[in-house]
Length: 258
Image (cartoon, rainbow, N blue to C red; front, side, top):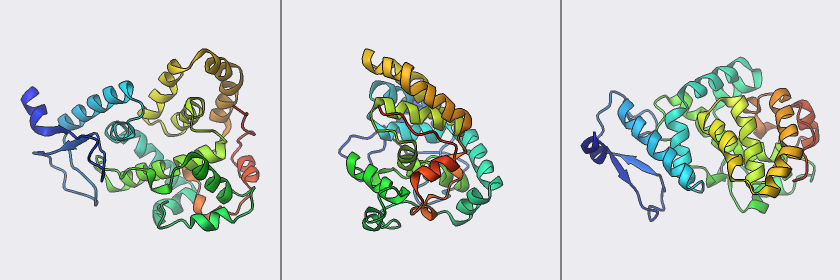
């Protein structure tokens, strides 16, 4: 088993700037052919090693987004299948599946979003990106999902995550991330979102914990219960929509200030 692990898994150093992925598979013996550009086919044993290794790394260093990404891909098959079916059953979600739009600097005119009315989704998204010093290109490509359609669903989830933050009015601090993870967990069922929602609060300081329990958690639970599925929203066709009108449409209460 240890010999197989050494043969199959290489821990990449952070000098791998082109793609700082946590684990890279080689000498793989799988029955799955390469299905898309960045796909790395893996078998059950390799996925198990990837899952355990990325989980341990995510726990010890939550800043390792590459490890979190791998964990999501290797544990999310059934959740991704459910999200895919949910999107297909929705008229707007079905168009997303058919068109397979991408959100990155090549497909989104950031300057155009910046010039939109300040209360629009587009301008609000631009403001979120600017304040947090991130770009639409910040998300890693999917590699370990052995189904092309489900790989797109995972990629879509990653690329709209910042839009979830924007619509939910949540910052990228620990409180905001946990709130978003609760909503993502209830709407997607992705194991990595569930673990983030459950274990994230363990890292709160006393003041954060008080804010979470008394102010943020009640709003989060109501949103989990009432909000429409965010994965079915074709955000690219709604850039000019008033963000509060969109929240009302999605049954999202005005976010609390945290």
